[in-house]
Image (cartoon, rainbow, N blue to C red; front, side):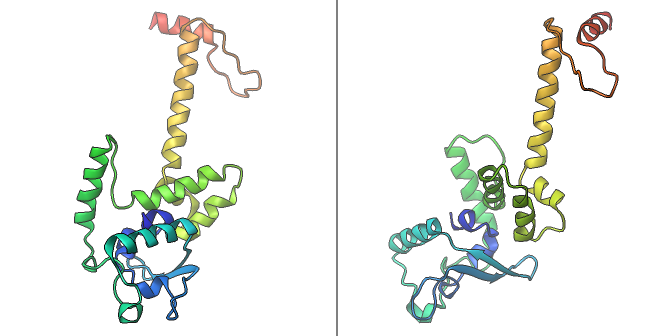
Length: 196
């Protein structure tokens, strides 16, 4: 859940120490600053209130003491050797139990973070720019592909064209008054298909 709420890679989340979340005086940090395992770059992300609620629930459930050893202990002990395989298996099992029939993996929470950010801000074109920077991608195209927007867009186009063709085959007149290209008129398209 912490990976989803902060948009961080699961490997970076596994490596968190309590000092990444708390100041030495016990005060909660507002931002998470980590050196990304994959890129080696410094990463800076807000720790939202929803993440703090999950952290507090985890502390209670795991009977953890963040201040122990001057906040130097791992938040998730036993995960320092990147237990991605175990995480992948647990995530797959949870997806199966939830009846999800699509591929879910370690990057799913990070991708979901980005996808939700775009869906929550549909009229803000700068969201993709911010996500590109946040994810450390070299261009916006990579970000859009990463979070599934490119596939979603091409799927919608295919559905739209399929719907148009179905309407034309069912005898509906479909016109594109403002088209600057010559296209097959729907009645001609029906006849063309009938002859093919």
